[in-house]
Image (cartoon, rainbow, N blue to C red; front, top):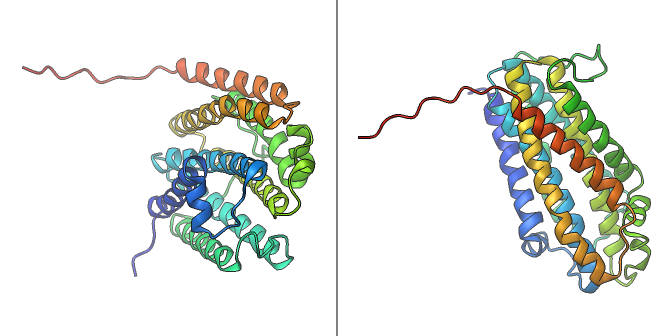
Length: 298
């Protein structure tokens, strides 16, 4: 039997990350219909779309990580990326499994068969990447520096991760508290006649969990393979993904105004995030690139 390679296993994760990114950010209603999820209306529908957009952006962040490492020429980087990716999808598997087992996902919100389908996908991706990790030398992250990026590009990576870490942990640990703080109490104003509140809580929690795991994946990979090529690819991919995320602020503001929701955390979210992304972009801009000469066309 042919052993799965890191490129193949990372591609599998890429495909599903891309599918969920596109579905959540651009075709939310179609995705809701595919999962046979409860059909929301009014401000509940707006809240659901906003949360799905956020989780979609987190999948885009993961997609950027996968794409950058997959194209790296460093075998150790690919190996640790497989281990990190396996851990990420396993955590999602455990999270959804526990939520289903303990009744945190009402059956009128998402039918169990849809959750089972997700669990099957999560398990497949996790096992495929675990197998690829074992087939590629079973490289491990270097924990001697506590996964803090060292050397070239270190400030750009560490500042960004520290910023995202604060948001991701708050969202994963206390999703309702975070959502209320972010929207000025919009969660308490959501209708209780539909399962919109548990859906919002579930999505905010998964958003934070996914973002945290991507941050951990980046640092674990760079701890084992800190060559400049891999660092450049990763930093470039993260900048692209986060510029897209910042662009979503432009549509959230008019929506919040129309719904009467506050934006008490907008400044403390946008200003540091925008500043760090600009710093990352400027850091990339200082890198000397060798551009091949154009071929003369007769």
